[in-house]
Length: 198
Ligand code: 5GP
Image 1 (cartoon, helix red, strand yellow):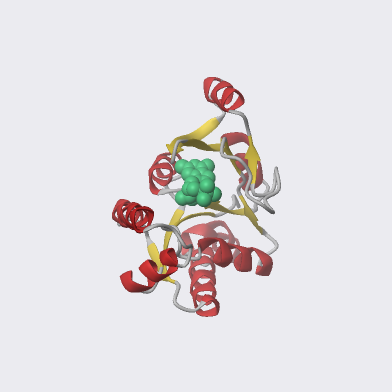
Image 2 (tube, protein in one colour):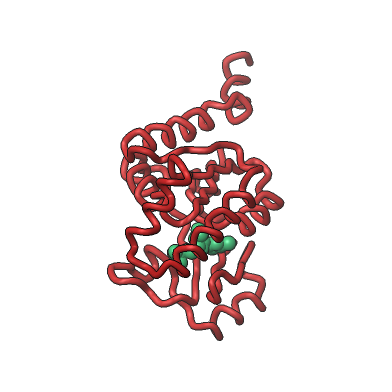
């Protein structure tokens, strides 16, 4: 049985990283798909775990060699999902979380139509504003971030599920519920059911 692909997107401030981290901790068969990027590592980020941090030249070479299923330019930096690593995990039966933005998600849908698309949102616009404000940026930067966040939400209205993150533990429960329900889809178990009947 090939693994299940969970594609997760969220505007910044939604708490996506925490929800994914908690879920990954609870399910050892679930793995995180490590993307490649040209953006510099943030404090605490580890090469090969959070991202593969590449120079722009190396990234472009990999694009040229056709190594990415999808890649985008985001905030002036390149981000991409490598096909080999993903297929290897799925073939081994692992389930995978892909943390990517909606343009990349659409490209993934073309290649993996059975992937499951989950949008994580803060509970309300006011809460989104206050979470962005806590980052202590100027009003102009805040305004820009808010617009970007709303654009990202609009771009993801075709997703299968939405998880509102009002309280982290409840949001993690909902996220797990989606994952487990998708694992139980009858279509994923036809062979096993057939074994009962043969
Ligand atoms: P950050 O720089 O904050 O880690 O990520 C910025 C944005 O890039 C997030 O929306 C994240 O989901 C997205 N992203 C991360 N990796 C990939 C990828 O491989 N492909 C695409 N399309 N987006 C990605």
